[in-house]
Length: 392
Ligand code: HEM
Image (cartoon, rainbow, N blue to C red; front, side, top):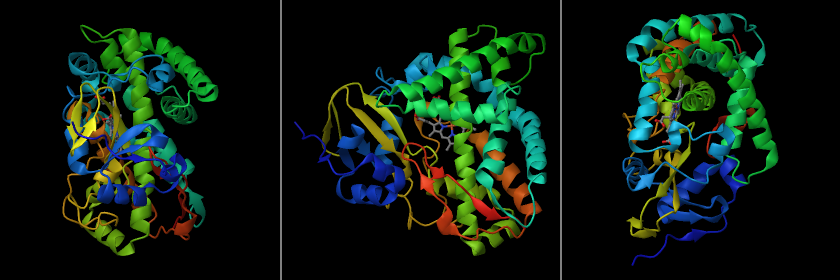
């Protein structure tokens, strides 16, 4: 029988939060399947392995009976379900993500929000675009497409953070769950209030299509999956925006070429490849198995580190470098397999087609006076936590 993967006792969660990429590079070279003690998980850092796991849901289940996510969300969301059960819930929300609906309803709505929010920014000043634009923009657009536009930008962002912190509360501390509970109460009260409106004026928003479906999924699951979209639909495009701005503003030659050619879609793909907003996902082995000659016992939780897969030397040359004009890479930032991000198309449009061109059109000489002032954080979710740009 094969040996267990090597055990690493030196990597800390703090290192992963602050500067994970050198660690990933070393793991890819020396221990691509590695049990990382601090995380209590087996890390998979090669692109082939992360894809293999996500594409084999029978062997690697999304259901984690002990996940704090269930406690934080007051339910198992579709992200933690497998097979038919998962598909039914995913399909329930799908009409809101249909390409035609995105094109005809959500893109114009995101456009209006982007134009309004960019117009209120001052000129000639250093502004932190994280709180001043990118966070609120992603929150407002999402509130509209989910059909919960009565929630304020502040509520949406606070709820999203509370859910993410609760879902990642592996130490089972009280405080993050208390915050998630408060957010859940507020959200449920809002969803309850909105039901009448969505039934009398049905539309294409996620809440509306789920409530009005001919054979609706249970209300508890409708609410849980709106909440997963809140947790999954604000921080990631926001972090992608901040990352892309950093990449472009620290590579002015690339920025000029992107502007000349209107290659915002390429800038988007390279930004999310370079720093994956969702860096890691968990899957549970349903039986004894092996990866790269290492034994993975039944019940073990493996972590697919897509942030590392995207820089894998077998997949991409000079992967540590931001280069909009590299050869196309099959990055894994939106995942693989049945749980492939349902908001992929929406995120591409909201960031690449809408916000980036509008922002650079209004501030063509925007610059980043001090790139060292930008602070990057996050292991499971990663991005800059500030973006102090000079708007000109
Ligand atoms: C750049 C932005 C985004 C990135 C990088 C991203 C990334 C991801 C990833 C990696 C997953 C799969 C997680 C796993 O396999 O365990 C996922 C799932 C999901 N995402 Fe996104 N996401 C983004 C934007 C959005 C947006 C804007 C929405 C909603 C409007 C959204 C909704 C969802 C949903 C509902 C799922 C669960 C799908 C399922 O379990 O079947 N995402 N996302």
